Amino acid sequence: MKVVVTFQPKEEFVTDLRQDFPEVDFSFFKKINDAEHALHEAEIIVTMGEDLTDRHIELSQRLKWIMVTSAGLEKMPFGAIRKKGILVTNARGIHKIPMAEFTLGLMLQHAKQFQSVLKQEEEGVWSRRLPTSELNDASLLVLGAGAIGSEIARLGKAFHMKTAGVNSTGEEVNHFDQMYTLLNFEEFLPDADYIVAVLPSTENTKYILQTEHFEKMKDSAVFINIGRGDLIEESILLDAARTNKIGHIFLDVFGEEPLPSTHSFWEEKGITVTPHLSSITKMYMPRALNIFKKNLKAYSKKSDELINVIDAERGY
Amino acid sequence: MKVVVTFQPKEEFVTDLRQDFPEVDFSFFKKINDAEHALHEAEIIVTMGEDLTDRHIELSQRLKWIMVTSAGLEKMPFGAIRKKGILVTNARGIHKIPMAEFTLGLMLQHAKQFQSVLKQEEEGVWSRRLPTSELNDASLLVLGAGAIGSEIARLGKAFHMKTAGVNSTGEEVNHFDQMYTLLNFEEFLPDADYIVAVLPSTENTKYILQTEHFEKMKDSAVFINIGRGDLIEESILLDAARTNKIGHIFLDVFGEEPLPSTHSFWEEKGITVTPHLSSITKMYMPRALNIFKKNLKAYSKKSDELINVIDAERGY
Image (cartoon, rainbow over all chains, first blue to last red; front, side, top):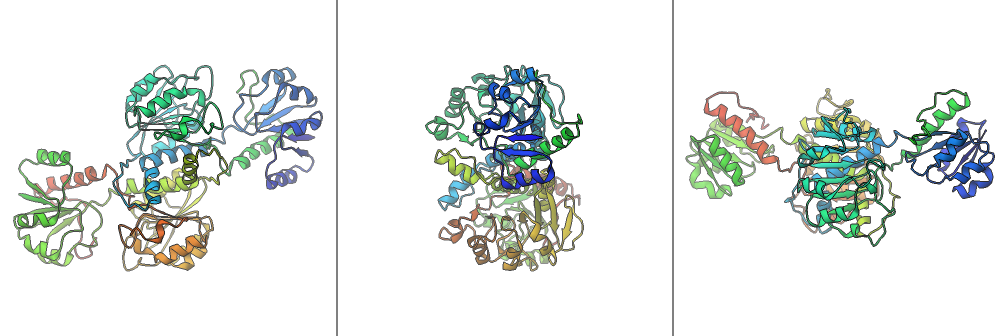
């Protein structure tokens, strides 16, 4: 059984896979272009998720299964995949821990004014007059109450926050005190101290946040986007920051990544740019490969107990 | 009934007190020296806690109760207080929320490498190659498993950390998986990813952390002191940071405060100085005055249901 991996994991992961599956023939390549000559023999492709095209699917005549070691499936050639009836699985579920920790970290960074504290430290200034606040009793609105959003709310509740969530139906989700839909979440905006967006990019979410939403927020509110950059026009964010409509904006995702070095976001005092970091931790690859290994065991036994199977019709 | 307050709270608190207790005669002073002429009539003194001397107690011939709006009682003239049988209450209990939030904030700041992220942002650099980690599954050792320590552990457990606590007896405390005493906590040091000290300054805790303790810690360990500066000689901390015996040191408390601007801590890369901020929030004064108001109601009714009464013999 031939497995083509279109990225180069650290040596420890390569060794680990070969030890656990001595009967499997693994080939590792730095990128998919290097792997082309091997594709025609591949029964399984393991990919980070943004490199496969229709042509690769066509070349891979024996392909039965694609394992995507991320959650993003936006660039998958599902048309060709459906036609050949190829199984697709991904690594969904491994993002909630790092992304929720990252989000709470940003919220505490703001509440405790760590940016100012670090600036003071650099200048050797001892000043305790900082507008520090608490998460305790503050209100948190999460746009996108899925697995990640619910984990953010769970930690919010541990800090005694009030939590409100937004999903497509408004149905209840664990750890949220109240639920809203994309049509009525505006009602909660005047109460929210922290607004976290963790929405995927779909037809229903693209550019839905408008100037009017920022006008409804508290002057002191903090907006954090760890979902997708196309949730909101960049000009709206810049305007909100420049006119002090809002307390602070943290952006981890952008329309164009890497964010160009000339972009106004970098210089804007009211906006903090982080380089799409929320899900990155040392645990990413071990967790993703654990899912792959579980599935590879099931697949080898011709069991149908694979987890994280993607519906190629719906694309998720 | 005459109440002398030896600090000047914001106008809203003054108004609030006078509205709630119209029969009480409140006098507010910027500092105790300004209040001297009023002390001989004071039945109650409300103080931040570091200004009273034997002489002030002597001058206050009608004094029956001292309310300290902090938790620190180290400088209280308990000898003179005992002699006159004066009641002392303080604001203990109001520190655990802000101090635990501050501590988790520092831990996340380290795990998510926010200092480097902010540095990168300042330079307009998009780089995702940062040694970020997670609190999830990491080990937390708290020296001082009292109300504040237990609250830190509670939040640690919410982040799925392993928690170990240290108190004088080793008896169980909520939210700690394991307990140690000051005599055997060294056993846990090689396992600890985060070591948080929140010990008061007593004969048993002064300068107990020694070079040997830092030698037992992981190279990647993070040491956070939000208790008292005299837990450890400054030279030991500087040495640990300079020789990379430890991952990072966060210090919020110091032998001398404010920390002198020429002090080596400011410049040391492995040490982050914060200006005794852990308990400061906008909620400090409202919470402290709430305790005072509860007690003033009880005191006015000659009830003995006052909370946070200090034993003047023991000093806590």
